[in-house]
Length: 108
Image 1 (cartoon, rainbow, N blue to C red):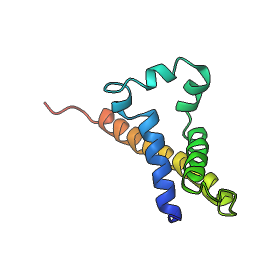
Image 2: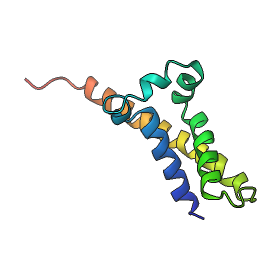
Image 3: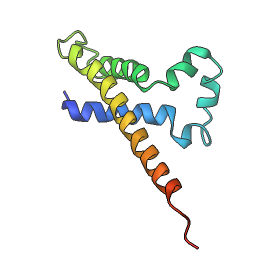
């Protein structure tokens, strides 16, 4: 069983790959196909929602012989919340950087 931090980072990494990574929109055009269906479009825009589904799929994939372990109650929601919090932090940092550069006078 992976550590909780490794689990959260894995869930976030897969969520980022599916929702924001350029490879799935340009090289392998899966995301544009998925966004045609309203359920998948809404899912790809919500890291918390994707985290739940990714966490459940990872959990049942890794623990297929005994998936109903007590740790699932911790790991699946923790992966989802972790992915959401990492995404919020990344958005905050991006917004802070963009507003900092926009507020500066341009060098002449």
